[in-house]
Image 1 (cartoon, rainbow, N blue to C red):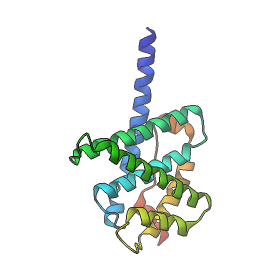
Image 2 (spheres, rainbow, N blue to C red):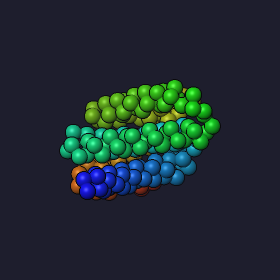
Image 3 (tube, rainbow, N blue to C red):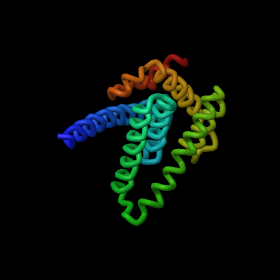
Image 4 (cartoon, helix red, strand yellow):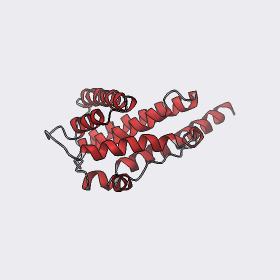
Length: 185
């Protein structure tokens, strides 16, 4: 009987984590990013957008309840499982996975630091520069970084309007990126 109680709780947590992660992935895959603002539609470009959206969610729940902290860890774990799976789909063998995962984890936590620092300081140019540096490292200038920075700020504000209870129930919404751009113009 005790084991069945733990099993039900684990399945409920898994359902919440899956729902939240699915919402993050859907937000990161918005066609607007790839068609309108020239985010590379490549494994690295998709990683960048997914990292950005995981960061936005993690930033929103930071310092909240212990339950949200646990959910945040589970979402982060799911993100890295997804990255691991993607590397394997790209044909990277078992021996190369740990090295690449360490590099991608360092990249992720570095992005969290730079994006969070810029958002806390309300430093729009620093945010746009960090996004350009990470999303389009191949370009000296990426004019669309401003649009992605605007979306990032709007998404952070949008997430603040959602309740902790919504997140604990697996409900997470991001703004439509195209609508944010339309409001800017």
